[in-house]
Image (cartoon, rainbow, N blue to C red; front, top):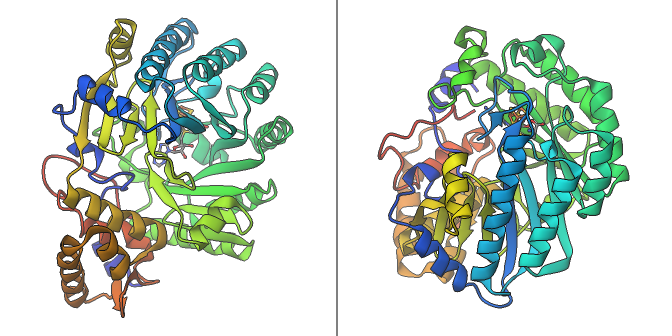
Length: 449
Ligand SMILES: C[S@@+](CC[C@H](N)C(=O)[O-])C[C@H]1O[C@@H](n2cnc3c(N)ncnc32)[C@H](O)[C@@H]1O
Ligand code: SF4
C-alpha cells in the first residue's frame, strides 16, 4: 500500500469497545436508573464482573489507563473498602439473581493489592453474588509490583487467566516510556502465574512507541515468543496528551509516523502468523487451540470495554471508579474521581454518573460495528432476521458505501459484506462509517493504525 494511502486512511477514529462510544454517554442515565436495570436482571442471567483498581506504584509515560501513582498503601486500602461497599450495594440490588461466570480485575494495577486485600475483595464478591463453579478469574498483572506472597493469594481467589503488561524490551524504548522491565523478570512472573493457576497467559505489546523501529519491535517479539504466551495483544500506541498530561513526557518528535507504525504492525503480524498465532480482530493474536482463536473461527468473538473476549454474558457489571457496565438496557459509567466515587458508595448510593440507554437503531449499528471489529464481516440475512426493516435500510447504506469506496476496503459478495484484506488494518475507519454519532461533539481519538 502506498505511503500516501496509509496517511490518508490513518485519520483518528474510535476503538469501538462500545457503540455508542463512551464520549456519547450522558448524565440522563442516573444511579437510580442503574439500580432499576440491576433489579430487572433475570434469575438465570450470566454475569461478568469488571473490577477497576486505579493505582500503580509508578507511572509509565505512555499510559492511557485511568490510574494514579501512589507509593503509599493507605489510599489503596481506603479505596478497597469503598469497592467492597459497592459490591454489597450491587449484590443487594441483584437480590441473589444472576450467576457470575467471569471476573476481570483490571486497572491500573490490580497486583498493587496486598494478598489479604485480594482475598477480602474476592470474599465480598462471593458473599454478595452467586458464582458459577467454572467462573473464569482473570487478572492484569504488572510484573514490577508482584511479590512472591501475591501468587498464593491469586491462586486462592481462583486465578484462571493472567495478562501481563510488557510493551517493549529495548532499554532505550523503556527509558523513553519510563517503564523498566527485564526479560528475566517477565519470564519469572509468567512461570509463577502458570504455576499458580493461570491456564492462559496474555502478553500486552505496543508498537508506535518512541525509538521503536521495525527491527526493535521484531527483537522484542522474538524474545516474547520464547515465553510461549497463549495470547498476545499488540496495540498501537495511542498518543492522546490532551487527555493524559503525563504523555507530554513523550515528545511528538520521537514518535514514528503513520507509515512506520503501519510497517511495524505488519512486521509483527507476519512474525506472529509464521509462529502459528492466529490473528484475532484488529490487535490480538492467539494460538490456534486457544478459546479466543476457536471463538473467532466460529464467529463467536465479542468486543467490550476490555477489548476482545469470548465471554457472552447477559450483563457486564463494572465495579470501581470509572468502571463501565453494559446491561440489556444500555451502558452505565461510575464516577471517575476516586474521592467522589468513595463518597457515593460509602454513603449507600450507586456511583453512576453517566450512561446511555440504547434505542433500536443503536442496537442495529452496535451489532454491525461489533461484527466488523470481530469478524471483519456481517451477513445481510442475520441482520434482517434480528432487526427487520431497519436492517434493510442499513444494508442500502452499506451498498452505497461500497459503491463510493475507490480503495475497495469494504466489499460485498452476495449477502456477505466484508472488509477486504487491504482494508483490515483500517477496520476502525470502516466501522466509523456506520457510526451515526461519529464527528458529533468534541471527542478526539487516536490514529487509525
Ligand atoms: C492496565 S495496563 C496492564 C497491567 C499493568 N498495569 C501493566 O502495565 O503491566 C493495560 C495495558 O494497556 C495498554 N496501554 C496503556 N496505555 C496505552 C496507550 N496509550 N496506547 C495503547 N495501549 C496502551 C498497555 O499495553 C498496557 O499493558
Ligand atoms: S501501563 Fe500499567 S503500570 Fe504503567 S501506568 Fe499504566 S496501568 Fe500503571
